[in-house]
Image (tube, rainbow, N blue to C red; front, side):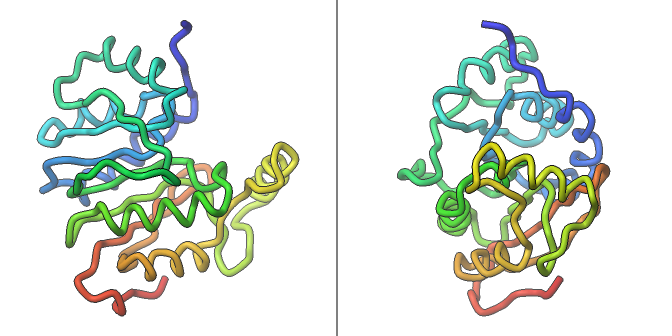
Length: 205
């Protein structure tokens, strides 16, 4: 099997790392949802040696992730666990959760299941960092994102860029409090939520 490769992972890994380094500075274990090729996992694991990075994805992606892990030989990056967000999650709580470029390729029921699962499996006061392209109040942030959304919908009408307003509604229902939006290169963002003690609390964007 040829080792999977994503140029986007190379392009965005350093800006993402700068944000994750702050939110996960005191974290011991992070769950990555949708590890994909595994490139983010080995890079972030090497740069954040104080934490244990748990990879996860649907079973079809595991061989590729394992190839990257074997080559990198990072003791703090764990072999992938099978995780379909619509199926039962591992019975474990994580101090931090990260996901990149997932919500726009998920069908909406999967996005709903993602936030519900994060709300259940993120530790109190833990951060959920979600990277990708997003809309805000029904508006595209760039012409390139609008074109990307159109290309996704051509592939599958149930794919597409998600709006922050809709994601925030799911987050509130899951007991997650919005913290901050980080502008990233190439018209992407990192949205950060924190597991709240009081589900009624949330910050506005």
